[in-house]
Image (cartoon, rainbow, N blue to C red; front, side, top):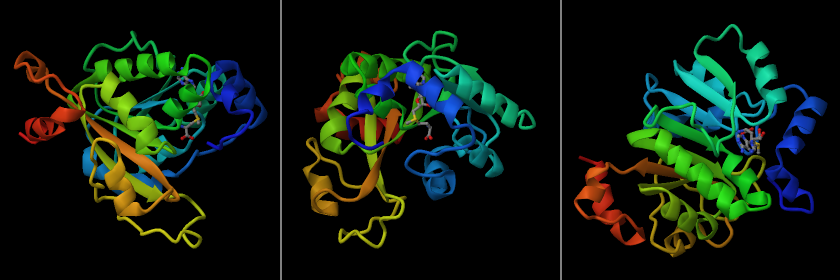
Length: 253
Ligand SMILES: C[S@@+](CC[C@H](N)C(=O)[O-])C[C@H]1O[C@@H](n2cnc3c(N)ncnc32)[C@H](O)[C@@H]1O
């Protein structure tokens, strides 16, 4: 997602219907499945039930199926994209495509999925009007449909300073951060390279990320948010940026 005068349209559902009607075929934002596969395997076993939010006409979920994933539900607010993907993937029973607004996933019961994957959808909502409210609604729904200890994997252009507070305020989770070089930028970057599957040290304000990668690294950020168990609340451990160490130990048990 590039910053420019039209970015506000990314928050408008009618923009997406028009775009998918005018540009049929497949398009993947930011990264394609094979580049991210090692990270998915690190956090999501292939038999887990996965929700891909804002799938668009991306080939990402087909890549997952080729790679062994067996139960992938895809939603998007664009009926044009959903119809096209239903037709295209009618021979893949591992994939379901449903038109749904990620801010209201009441058709799914609480705790329906072990993983939610988001490549560019929170970013879209953050471009539109009422962005903070829409993003919070979306994240609360993501948190609701996830099982305890389920993972929300967010692939975004947003650096920690723009995403961490939002994630921590809306989700009761512990967060790990990974990065991947932007496509076509491998030669141009003078920054340190970082292995996709190694989490970057993450402090409260993201300064540790700059120390690890340098200033303005040419990367996409991948936030892996692991949902806390409800006992964390009943034991009075209010989850905030200050209790991440507690949560890390809860989630690893
Ligand atoms: C930047 S595109 C990313 C598409 C795809 N995930 C990819 O990686 O190529 C954002 C997608 O989010 C969808 N979207 C926007 N607002 C949405 C909402 N409220 N609920 C569900 N999907 C939404 C758009 O229709 C679009 O397909």
